Length: 106
Image (cartoon, rainbow, N blue to C red; front, side, top):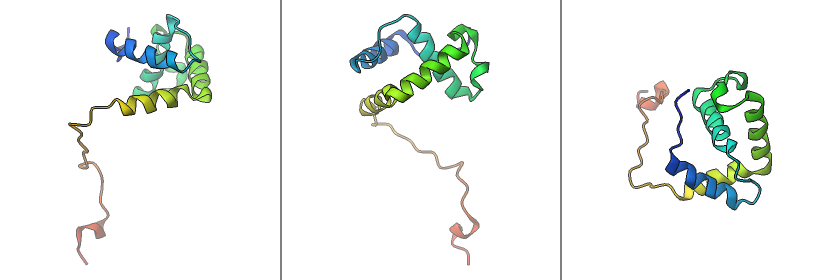
């Protein structure tokens, strides 16, 4: 089984947000589907390479497309953004390359 992201606590919050849209039903396979989507986004692999532990890749891909077209994922991200705790927010600029003229040299 690949490493997963969603704890039971996170999943209970996410499924409540998803059910509130009125376009998602509470099905047991939704957790694995969302884990598969998050795995693919985190790793950057092709859909066909998503591990079978999350379900068949084509089912995960179809659900991703469906939720994207219906705006469910966007609505979920908007709601999660509003719940973010921004007290400790860090932006790391150490990997951003500056142009040679940005140093002030003439």
